[in-house]
Image (cartoon, rainbow, N blue to C red; front, side, top):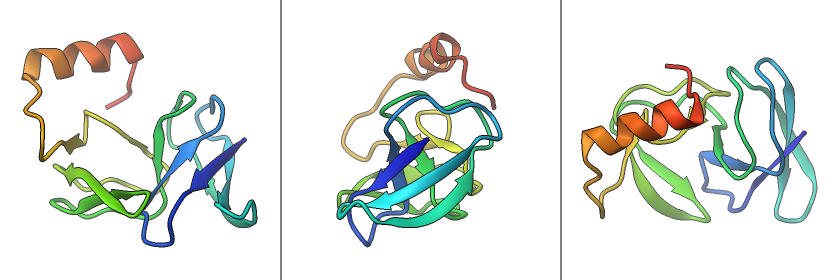
Amino acid sequence: MKAIKLSPSDNVATLLGDVAKHELVEIISAENEVIAEINALQKITFGNKIALDVIANDTHIMKCGHSIGKSIVEIPQGQLVHVQNVRSERLDIPEAIIEEIIKQMGIEQ
């Protein structure tokens, strides 16, 4: 499976299909060049983000060269980057909604 890193400054890549736990993910650049391979630490569905490296707690999550939120815990390389480990700086999502998203998506924590 492949994931695309849209900007050189990004610390996440977007999955181009569903990935199984422990599946190897080819990371491609916006120019369609393979730039890395990462082991997925959990099931990640199409369109979601995978951590390209370890992302420290309280670090901006960069996608398309822009911050889309901040990590609330350290995120290991290969882990899903989503509501269970990131908070938006623009939108305050209630905890009950976050818990429901985690439940509906079957996100491992």
